[in-house]
Length: 187
Image (cartoon, rainbow, N blue to C red; front, side):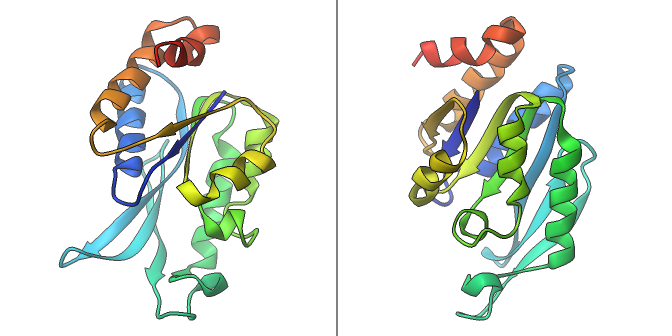
């Protein structure tokens, strides 16, 4: 089962993924994958880093770019070596109990670049559960490309604490084969 986590920019998707990873690792769950953490200067987002969830290693991933100067004409200039590093992290992440992919965005789902390998890894299903971040306007594209059971959850500022507790409780109190099923029966 894949939990597709979506929501508007700034609602806390990355923060939720990081909180879930930390809480479950503390309980002995094998959590792996990548987080994309923002870098701010004077409250302005100026860059992004990729974090290996298993090791905590943080690597500069992208810098804000002028319009039309970014990778694939996006507003971010991605470092090719950091993208390759993230792809290696994803390839080495499975098997695991929980695979987190934060995030698959326009670079992957529109331009077929970046961490496109994540789609193959998700298709291989060598993880027990996956938590994948996808922007709202790309959800349909993701679902069309991944042939798996996908449950879509929309995160908001109002529901993020409740969502965190539900995910962590479900993944730590149920038998392995029924974890996610139980989580979604409570909706």
